[in-house]
Length: 211
Image 1 (spheres, rainbow, N blue to C red):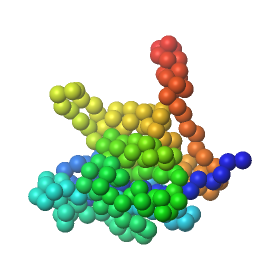
Image 2: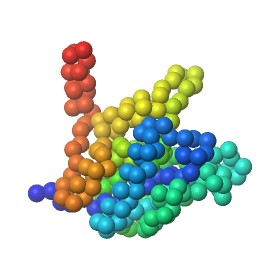
Image 3: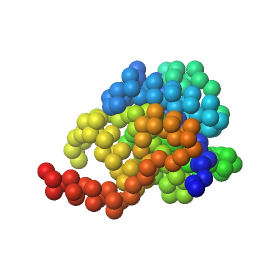
């Protein structure tokens, strides 16, 4: 018989910059992720799961996340809701240079559920940092989002970045699931499916042979 996880919901960087600012989220679209973020926060509060809001701040005068600017402010989907704890960060991982690790230890958290932006950047960094610190991690794929990228290494659409990131996370770092499924797990006290690197490799090899 499994023990119900001691969760905390980490809401990363749900700020105006990702809707009306310089970094508009493309996939999943905001019309999907913002309502999912709201549902996750509401469900967590109803289930007495601590909600921790993270806000990214850049150096003064930065073109993005300049403290006090409209882009820096929390998006109304978060600002209009209650939350239990607040963390301000300046680097991608929500753990680096913050008191998040100490807060989670104080709360007795063993499972960190991650939502917010961006999939491949602050979410990814935080998920891997949490795993390295011995926490079980959950990522709600429809309550996160990515942007398209291109540079000297190549190019990828927001959808490609998001989908590959979710596959990698599920393979070794987190349980990846939808917001609605997570809410159902909250009610049941059960744990979501987790994969591992070997199982994910074997499934990938089988798919490659079938093509």
